[in-house]
Image (cartoon, rainbow, N blue to C red):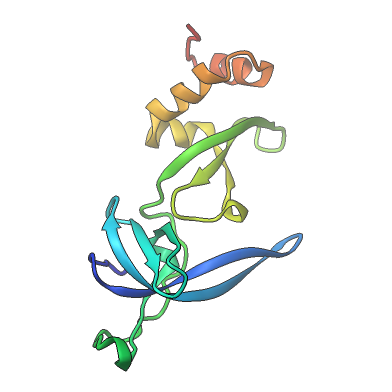
Length: 157
């Protein structure tokens, strides 16, 4: 995955729902990287509109324009993969009868709402246990969350 530095000029992917099961990606910009939140999450500012947002590195690509005097070559967009995705928050819980396990709907930092995904609780407990436990504590009044906590041996205070 490409690494960006503060000051780099980039294009960013704006993802929208194209149809019920498909996403449409449109490249926007140019933008400039203004800060690095982590190795994969960057704050960017659109140079045309002035809008600021967070973006995941997999949704950025280097931008080259002679009027900006930037010499970076345009890199191919790196496909979404399992490396470096950061949980923004958990939205809700459910039980997957086919998989016979609980799942959490995850909002990912730097990705759009259309890219929220259901992830197994066990995987999230291995990756971000404090965030899962905080979600459980905040939603302890929900029956599904109490069942999830019980199934994974997590006490609700």
